[in-house]
Image (cartoon, rainbow over all chains, first blue to last red; front, top):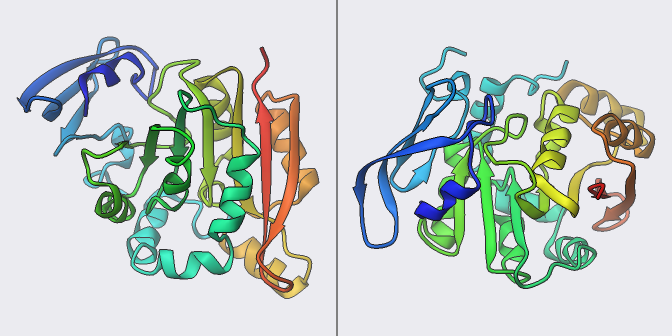
Length: 64
Length: 206
């Protein structure tokens, strides 16, 4: 994801701002890292450059 | 409650559907119908457009012809793999994984929010429509394409069992409940006898 996406994305649960924690980036994009809600603390992964902003109950590892 | 009105079931369903989706879909919703709907939105070249439930990227591709600022969101990794194959993960479309009923975007972000072929799988469509309204700028447009409620009773039974279908009256109720006051519906059909699509364009209050 491009870093300027931070201007428009928010926590899907409470709509508060997210903090970007970068683990890996190239010249243009953040490839791996986390998006952490400044209010509730929920952390959303960036996986191969794609932000996974699914609420935690909908992630693959969530119980059905 | 239909069998797909459960998010983990929908995920499983889409895992298999994504294998055939672009081959099945044109019988119901083809490029001509898509482009007719896009034309009604009067998208400007610098408009920012979100495709909610973009899936394999069929509508996304049409939207990219109207503006280069296109964003895609889908819950299904398997559907998105098909979209990545078309556009690349770091190509012209900014992809996200997310839930239509709990959108991860700030208020008043987009000029146009589009969703085609997704509303029938939303457990609470009014919640998702409210979210679409919230993230669209005042004066912006929300366009939703869904399956029109079938007129023959055998298909009605199937429709009731599997997913949400709705007619114009039901669409009126959903959009009003979601806080829209200015909207219109139109019906599209590939050819006589094939399933109909109901398309609603709603304008977000100023």
